[in-house]
Image 1 (cartoon, rainbow, N blue to C red):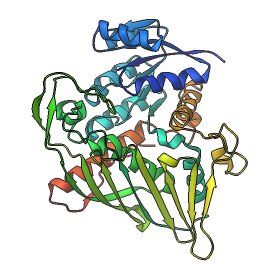
Image 2: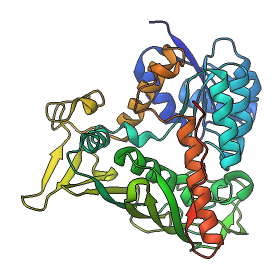
Image 3: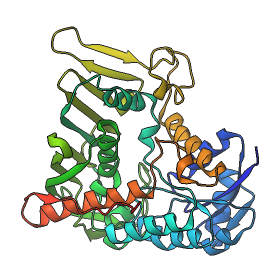
Image 4: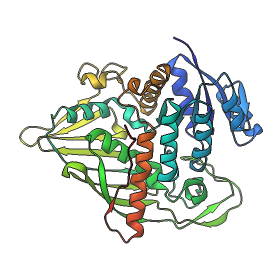
Length: 390
């Protein structure tokens, strides 16, 4: 199989995981990275053992040895970087959220479709084998009609007021913080597993820590580095919130999201209740799927390629009892992405699990509806989403 050259723009926290995942595929060459300056790009290139470094993302996109661009820049750069890559005819894998708002998200979705290239958003929890098991069980009707979808995504890395991230700066992160960062993951997973779409929302959002202290540099997610003189910065974006949901078909739902909750590291939980049985998946115990019953004992399905449905087997690489991890799920997403890229990005060749710019645009519409609901005084708002024209 022909080898593919990839370049990454924005070598922050998640960049190393993109690079690790594609190197594990065996047929992808990590050609270059681009950073905010030539010096910083060269430093990260040495750390990640990459030969080429660019201080200008346009130069990386122009590199003839690169066919795929991974965009892991801060949110405000997603639009210009991705548009430039699409204009050059490159396949694009973008970190989430795809864009700052629905208007930008729709522009990117339409540009990607017009470019006729592969376009992927890293909703990486889809890559967990038991996520695909739950999705397949529901699709086959094993749980009955879905009535309720609920859960949470809770973290604590912003509990300390001395942690200041670009995600808290509306010029760089957009109007939302926790919802756009991790709430987007939860909603994508809820729709993906249940097979239903969220049609309206009622959101109650708050800012638990309205004043943070910054050195002028942006801290990376989960970083413990807190050095330098601090200046106070007023924060307006939410770091905690709860949302009620209406799905098409009549199902109801709710979830909470927060990044200032001590003890919660990466606590994503999703439960889907059908009329016959329930399913619950916990990211921090991702090798188990809880199955709840009314008239028999509840059960726990452990990740095992000999036990899961065929739809989940392709994402299960180790025998039962051998635990698979966050990085393995991320690699599963990249495996599907590069399968699509090898096929030239043809729409009919896309693996069904793979999240595209359509999903990324939809996510911006969901978050926008939640923000509108909160601003309007916690009232129901319709999700305004315009699907790709067939």
